[in-house]
Image 1 (tube, helix red, strand yellow):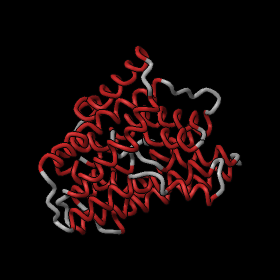
Image 2 (cartoon, rainbow, N blue to C red):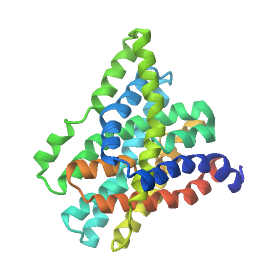
Image 3 (spheres, helix red, strand yellow):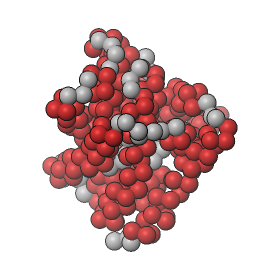
Image 4 (cartoon, rainbow, N blue to C red):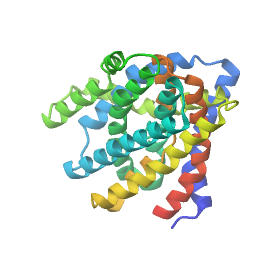
Length: 302
């Protein structure tokens, strides 16, 4: 079992240092966060997803287990969050942002490097499969929730088909299953763009955190953060036992389920008219709190 200090120094700190670069850059240069976010949604992340699916060497069994945990856990948290929102009597606009914040996981810009530092390249490969599944959730259920705060269910569902992430995953799957040979210049270009995705994501996270404020929204922010950081991994622990997942795949599935609210949550909130202030504040609180919860979780798993 690794000591808490080692985990913070070797795994958590490098991630927060890159986030700090984005934070400081925004304070100094007033970075265009919307432009960067749109590049992530429509360029960088689809390329990363395509590459991850197209060139994955994981067995179908392991990949299927990770996908199952990611989707079932996300839907489970969404249902719990929506129930809590109804019990607390949030209005529809707040309830959609609250549920969105609790559901979407930062399994990419935070989860991928953390699993790489904690478990090596094999851990990162498994984390990428989990991330791909959460991306599908983000750009289906997430888009619906972000839109549902101000649109009808039909119009919210229409927005789901306007983003490219799912299509990138399907094309990557076709390349993988069909053993399609991609020309070397194209493959290298894809690799360069995919490699840039995580640094850009971490930078955008820093920019978002520099603009976040928790004033006046403490109850929904703390509730959403608690659901994201505590209920997610609890559901994942039950699922890995139920599905008999063990070894490194078990560790990655639980750690990824404990990630804070995703950066893309703020992007979707702005893009589709949800409560962006509530979402951004939850990203801030859950990300800061995760430095504690993830350290404790890793000390238990490693």
